[in-house]
Image (cartoon, rainbow, N blue to C red):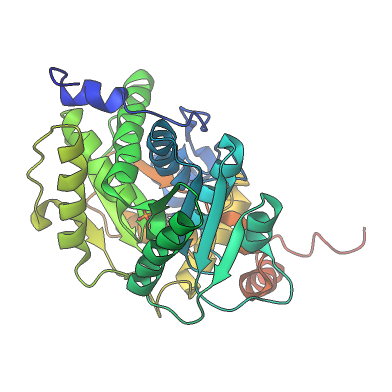
Length: 349
Ligand SMILES: Cc1ncc(COP(=O)(O)O)c(C=O)c1O
């Protein structure tokens, strides 16, 4: 690939071939009227395997590369109900390789939501008990070493699959939306998305620079898993760009990221997030969730309400509706839905 331009190198990276891309980009007519803003949505909640969301773009590259090196076992990690780990597990199944997941927390009596899917797609799960994100990443390396000793050919993906290579999945994602927006004749004031481990945001920054676009990219941090997210994400973006021979030179100052929606922390729902879930579901029949994209949408609404975004705005839906089916999150939402305008339709006719 020595003489190729960075954008050509990106296009030629090995892929596992798992997604149905481009994902749809469409206007939300009723939601736009409701909030008096021209709102578009990028449907990364609709992808190739196991109801996958944003993480599939990352695993497509990470597994694609591992397959070229003859690897046969994915080892990845996350929270007990990790969307990323579930996507990795399903992607591994779809490419005929094994998956080991190291998940924080303890084994529940009944696996639900993502954990149920992990089991359905045949992943092997290890429970790490109470563990920090760093401890989980370190545990992945130990598990890789153990599987090596057992004669497997394992490869690792960190929390959120936010390795530099994984992040490049979102550089491709940006080029994808850039072409869709041009076809639709839409010049957005900003693209807003949910952020935690940062690969999504970092990759979008690389893609934006490759496309020579100046569209604002605003991350809504919903987990505060990095002490200084802007610094960490700029570094990740630079390392991702390096892989394709592209000098991004991103710094903390280039990152637009809000931590206003973190609330009481990762996986703790907020009132604003739950209200946003109901709003979008009733206006459009589109689902977001209490852990990620509902809090992200609450951030989007805050940004719109604060003014300062001139023109159409894109909400990049990163997926994750599985937690709706975990009773810890679903029960309060069911209560809110009963009290919402138009509720009571479930009564006898
Ligand atoms: C549904 C959903 N949205 C957004 C994110 C955040 O993406 P990133 O980890 O790349 O910041 C995640 C990460 O797990 C997710 O599962």
